[in-house]
Length: 88
Ligand SMILES: [Zn+2]
Image (cartoon, rainbow, N blue to C red; front, side, top):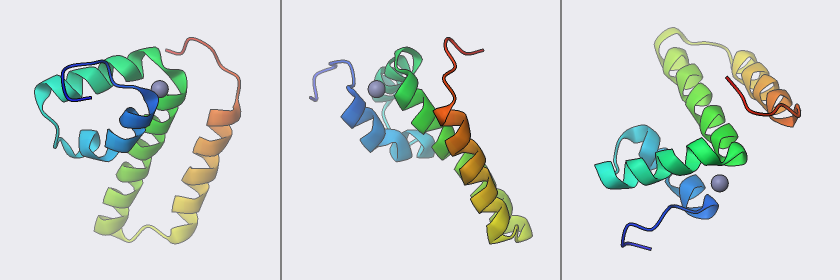
């Protein structure tokens, strides 16, 4: 799994944090990105983590209450359950 193969779901989810942290090589990022472009569930997971990070970043600055984080989590979870297709 180290020779430029396309990332699979498991690997993508596993590396989401590193991807978001910018800790991957350009090649690895491109592979994850490509998988996210083609895989709805993984993109949903990515969006969730991304949004969550925004919330946490804001929270660290401005002390956003825990209830808001919970609300965003719930909203994102509801979004994920909605049977949308295609996107954007
Ligand atoms: Zn996937």
